[in-house]
Image (cartoon, rainbow, N blue to C red; front, side, top):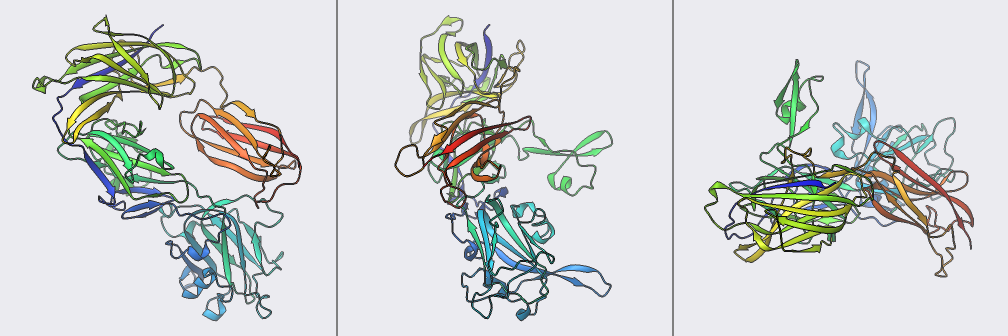
Length: 611
């Protein structure tokens, strides 16, 4: 049975116009000015970045120059007997971070109580594998170590903290709890202890709560990076192109296609400056209000925010091209995935007139068997606007972009007659059809019959028209992507997404080991344990973790922990533990876990290390 996919097109004439650009960062609007929100990244007027830290590097001496801070909080009691936190910002605290073991912070010498909370904002988010602090280690000072204290940390972003970090930071669980009845007796304090799991943690803030009554000092407080950093995110405000209905083109980062950088970019567009709508409950009614009125409303009457139905959904780029429909307002969001990533400019190209005033599509069936060859039919309908002025328009290419496997194009019809065309696979997945004759948008009706296999739940079929358009700099490709809409009342639809049928399909599939035995001895043969697998049925990215454990269940090495979409993956273990040393020969366990909203799947197996 053929599926039905409908594409609705209304065409406008395109005048010869130069490609323009909406620029944020260098040469354009400030990243700070157009920021809606950011998380786990550093932002300046002309840059976004994640700080780099090499594995084993002490990042404490970099804290102040990277925008961090160090301060202390002591409890103070007023005349009425009420206790409140007293913020103590003393320059002497910076001696703990100066990299000079010959200088020290001594609270008593600075007129401060011995029992204080010391907070360190690292200035950025880092993966931390070790914390170490100690007094001056000469004979006169090495016994002035802290005996009773609590060491804690968190990964909160400053944007998530409404007051100050001492109100929310670093409670349970603590990294070290050396209390009065079981005090520390070492000059050099290490986290993790030798008997603690060596599992690096992402950190932004560290708190040292001192409980000792005796004199103490700290010469150096060292924070040792593991070379990683959690991904960061930046969300722009809605950006408007006035007096135009732009066709969005390429999005460039630092003048280059985004695929050259470890980033994920998405956009959405709409007719106004409100991609999200806010409501207050007034009895049984919902009243649309501004974001500021919603945020300051009394608790209990705030309804959940909703996406504006006039705005498109978030979409990733296609071959560097913006997929969002032609609307005067656009919004972008970027994920920075690796430490050391830096963005100095985001440029979104556009032309002032769209290929089509409206462009919509739908696909049926909406549910298919996974991996089974299925026949599809795409119906395209093109129309010219009444006010087009008779200028020649239309298009010659139709692209179907998808990660499904298109097996064959069976036939193509224009106005119910067989059409001459050529088909070419797209490098990113899907097919491009080039018609021998230009498609006239005045009443043309196109049908494309093809067969495809769908492997991933929620597979998108993106449809876009492409044409060569004259500009001030010569001819350029012009694109316009269809939005999902119910354009044919004869079929259920309104979606461009195909789901897998409801029969049981595991999240993890095609799990394979290159070998269950490997020999990381440097001879170039069998140096790595290699695990490959596929993740299925995800409609959005899910948390995936891969680790190596000893037979007692203790984590030996965290091999991977992040969010992944459906797809095929490869994980590698080099035989090293968290400290970078080769593990002893023997039997170990590997663990692979996918934690999706609706289901969690865990897989364990055995791997043997031989020398």
